[in-house]
Image (tube, rainbow, N blue to C red):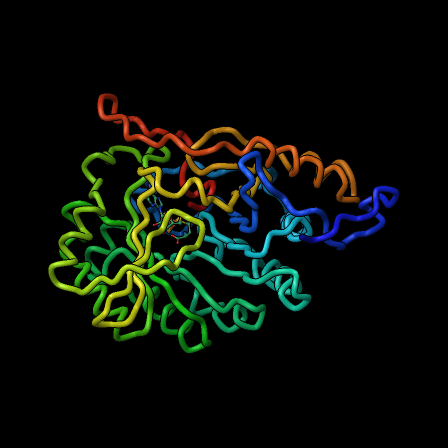
Length: 351
Ligand code: SAM
Ligand code: SF4
C-alpha cells in the first residue's frame, strides 16, 4: 500500500507525492481514469449523436493545464492507467501537449499506461507524436470495413483517412485494438471479415453492444440493438473461441480466436457482469466526475481546481466523490417510450 503523507504535513507542500490510494465503499480500488478531453467530434456516428448535435461552449471546458492537474491528482491517488477519449480527443487543439505532460508520469513510474480511444481520423498526423509521448496502445473505433457503410454510420467520416491513421499507428509501433459497435442489420454480416482482418494485421477486436445514452435524433436504439450473446454464438460456429481469464476491470469479456491467435472482446454493458470488479471513473471535459457509466450521480472538480492553486481541495473533492461510487448501474433500453436510459451522450463521458 502506498504510504500517505504524515498527518502534520499539508498535501500542498508535498506536491506530486503519492497519497493514500482511492478505494470506494465496496473496497474496489480506483486505478483507471478515463478522461473525455472534448465533447466535439469530426464524425456524427448514428448511434452516438444526432447530426445537429449542440456542443458545450468553449468557456465551460477545463484548459489542457487544468486537465493535466486533475489527472496528476488522480495519479497521486493511485490511478495507474489513463485513457483520453471524447468526443474525438485528437480534434482538441494542442492535445498533444496534454499527452506529453501526462507522459511524464510514465517516465516517473507513477503511471503504467497512457492511452486513447479515437475514431482514427487524425491518427496519421499524430501517431509519431503520441508514441513519443509514451502511448503504446490505441483503441480505434471502426464499425465496418466497407467504405459505403462507413460513410452511412459515421455520416461525416472518410474511410480511407481512418485506414491511413490505423496504418500510421501500427508503423509508429503502437498495439491496436479495433472497437466495433454491433448494429443490427448494418454490420452483423461483417464480423467474420473483421476477425480475419485483425488476424492478418495483428490487431485485437472488441465488439460493443449499443448503449442507451443520449438523444440521437430520429434513430432508434431498439432498431440498432443486437445482443452480443447471439453474435458470439454465431461466431462460435465459424471460429474456435477459447475462454481466457484476461480482464481489464471493465465491461469486456475476452476470448482468444484460436485460428488467428488474437483476442476478441465482447462489451455488454446492459448486463450486470462487471460492476463488482469496476476499477474506473470518468472525467468529462468540464471537470465533472462520473463514478459510474450507468448512473447520473456526479461530482464537480472544476470548482476545486479553480479555487486554489494547491491540490488539497481537489483531492478532498475526489475522495468525497469516490466515497459515493455506487455498487452498480441500471441500464435499460426503455422499450415503451424509446427513451435513452441516460440523458447524457457517450461523447460526454467517452464510454
Ligand atoms: N470519438 C472516439 C471514438 O469514436 O473512438 C472516442 C469517443 S467514442 C464516444 C468512444 C466509443 O464509444 C466508440 O468506440 C464508440 O463507437 C462508442 N459509442 C458511442 N456511442 C455509443 C453507444 N450509444 N453505444 C455503444 N457504444 C457507443
Ligand atoms: Fe464521434 Fe466517437 Fe461519437 Fe463517432 S462515436 S460521433 S467518432 S465521439
